[in-house]
Amino acid sequence: MSSYEARFKVWRGDVQGGGLEDFKVEVNDGEVVLDIIHRLQATQAPDLAVRWNCKAGKCGSCSAEINGRPRLMCMTRMSVFTREETITVTPLRAFPVVRDLVTDVGFNYTKAREVPSFVPPEGLAPGEYRMMQEDVDRSQEFRKCIECFLCQDTCHVVRDHEENKPAFAGPRFLMRVAELDMHPLDAASETGLDRKKTAQDEHGLGYCNITKCCTEVCPEGIKITDNALIPLKERAVDRKYDPLVWLGSKIRRRSS
Image (cartoon, rainbow, N blue to C red; front, side):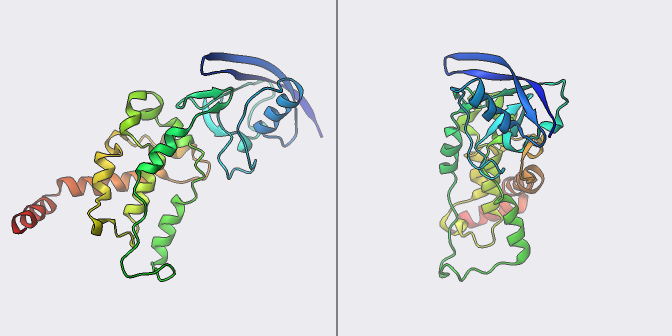
């Protein structure tokens, strides 16, 4: 097994402030960035704070920015960098720092609670639901999400404009709204809940300008923009501006 010495810059600090600290650390064949961070903890910086769990790209815990790009540290192989390159590891920029590479991602859980859950169809018990396979497949793509929040971090609406956070759910949770809105068994509309309208009015769908940066960083390869956000935007626009829908709402209102 061959090894070499790599140069790292790792952000150290807390909510009060901090900066990049230089390290030289051994790298072996086949290792990922998280391996190196663990070696730093073991040999040079025992108080370095980092969040991780599965080390298999399935828990989303070890999200960070590596050379400025949001990535999972456990899925970023050292072989993608040259041996001469200095590798910079910093916390997710869109969220408040707790300490070192650990950020407070509570914003995302707040947004998750704001999305109304699936509404079961009346008269059907669990186990009696029936769907076309193509509808199952369509929803299944979105359920691959591991909630690493890299899409939330890279979305410039959140990343560059703190003031947008109260009004904007971010791509991860707009994707959840889209999944529920296209679910053939979701009975939200029968309870008076219009998911397309709430996406626009309550979750900030209009803030998204479909730059596809969320799709580019998704470690699960979910086509967030093409398969969730753009179709949701199209349905929301149809609902709001289609003259036939508008006329129908007028007729129903007059009849009632």
